[in-house]
Image (cartoon, rainbow, N blue to C red; front, side):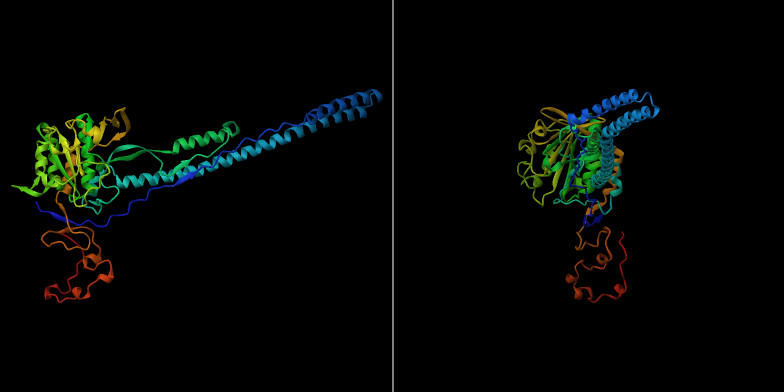
Length: 458
């Protein structure tokens, strides 16, 4: 099979995730009721009694003069009206003011809700860019984003395992308030519901850092664990080049058929060894055979430590174990892990290595959890990728090999696949100060005159 040289271009800028904090304003307080003076409270009663007494006196003294009787009645009505107006004026104004404060606060929460939703959209876009759905990875094969991650990138070997709820990247800080009984109840309830509803973003990609584990144990139905492992490997081989990550598969028996697709991966080819059909595919029936093939790669590696710094010139090695022969006398197990090596075990053959130095994932059809000494903590829904989808992706990637980086020459014996700019096609460096005029204007054969590159091809 012919191969294509793939030049790793500068990484495309990912959508920027949100951040920072939003300090929420407190809800309005209920106006305090100030008790009135007892004299002021009793004064209206005294006025009514006095008005009634005067009306009786005028009624008796006026020999039932209609004018005097009407005047007495008007005095009583006026007194009652004054009491009603004076007693309700303050309460009505306070209620109206409280209604306006409540409306203003609910309007403010509406604005904050729009801001939180924008942050959710930005957070989702950023995570979906870095950790796309496994079913969409085929569209990135041979694109500029293929093999974009380098060993010094922060997301190197961050592999998506499913979807779960995440905290909103823009933290919502609740306000400092007084006693609850002093706050306007409707606004307070709206604030609580707002914080509860928008502090968590559901159904976001969730990932693990493979570099941080010597072993990952997959527990559960074998079909489900294989589906999740295929999804993880699909992301790994799409975004990480064979120079940075090597893949080996230890499998035997019926399980071997489940991993035949791995032979198409450039990452599964041994860096130096070859067999009758080309570079050796690192697929064997025992972990010991894999160790034997990778002896030079494993020889100088230190014992696993989460804080150890991997050597920049050493690729990370991922070994899949599925029904293979494991004696537990292998160097990787005896050393309790090596720096830059991760075992993914689907057949529970590593003993306590995953419990001491790794991660134990529990896979069910609709939930994914991590097992610890305290039990299983469920945190999301697992990804899966079918055997057909994984093999199709592996076949799309299979022709490509890592070519020269930007600014380096690649041999003419194999085509170069990338998206070069016009300056790169013309051999002009990005920095004009380094442009060698004498080299560019050197004498050329007649057949090369007026020949201008305008693209790349096979």
